[in-house]
Image (cartoon, rainbow, N blue to C red; front, top):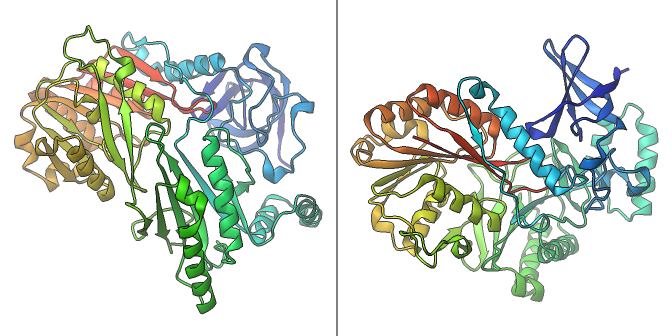
Length: 533
């Protein structure tokens, strides 16, 4: 029997939306599944460590009414913070999606909570120096802002296996599951659902997501029907056979272009399946809705055992049109035309292929990059971008400031291809130098970079959620001893950002302010901007 702890007061929310409480002996309790600040809760202990306890939220005893709106935007959302009559009657497999766990909080409260999370991440540095935390910049859209959404194909036997693992008394759950399947017309052999956050062995039957546009929701529903009608089987994660695996839809807001990426496994196709596949592809080509709505369609052939959309051996084939979509970032609304150095129209074109990274909130990415530009100030010489992805923030500087040469460093080859296209369509390919290498190994792999960075004016880092590699921090610190440049650091993880900046400050850098930007309403994610010099 797992231990239950009652009456804990949540005094802080940590990154990832984890609540922090303390026992009488000051041992910390880390609470998952929806804790909010200054609520009093009962929890179930799931793991006990020497210095802390991991627990799941069971019941809310008391909460701060100023934080709660009282209504969730999504029928698939379920929270103990809602009134009992507000929790819908959908079966358990259709609720607790949990990707946007803060729906029941009003947006002002969400922004204040994110500001507090950022300040808490920098508590060590605050002991050593003063830091100005600028007011968070909120998103103009709280719904329909996502430009990318991913789904997984699923079958009954996988759902059944998850129930077996999760429940000791399987027979009762089996009867209940069969009752749900009959009541809600669940197909035992075909479903296309969401992965539940933090539990990728579990899925949620989501019929509509409020974080993407209505167009994408309708397209998802239509594609789901087309795949089901094809007669092709869903991939079996246990036996590693059959066909359909994942579906990804990307939508660009300023150009209205849509990319569909269908992930399949074709290693074990039988003759009859090959015939069905050929017929299915013809049906896709002739489908009127897809012709009207989808700009390009690609198919990812993924035969790896891991349940991921792409790996190093995945072959992506263009089904129709170019295999990439184009977007425009328009900074015109932010431009102060009285400001010397800015052009009246600042528009940046870019190309994104299926595997390339781009900010999830397109419209507010414009604000993020414009804010970063203003924090950096004027650029006159060379730019070094250590994690350029397909285009990175440097494109935002193109029509604003004068610069000599840009050095791109990126490990993903597909992103380098996109980066080259983006340089070309913005007419700056003759000023760019591309390096396909991990940032920590760039000088080993490309010693000629030493000559190119002599006139460095700005270094840009927008790394993955993990820490900066220790060799990158050492390289930047050594470079700072030789050249007087600015370092622009953008991160979606304030915890790792704070750790990296602390090490950079020890290595000759200075900084004074942090600018949070909210690109992800209803979630714990936060973007932060910092300029070091």
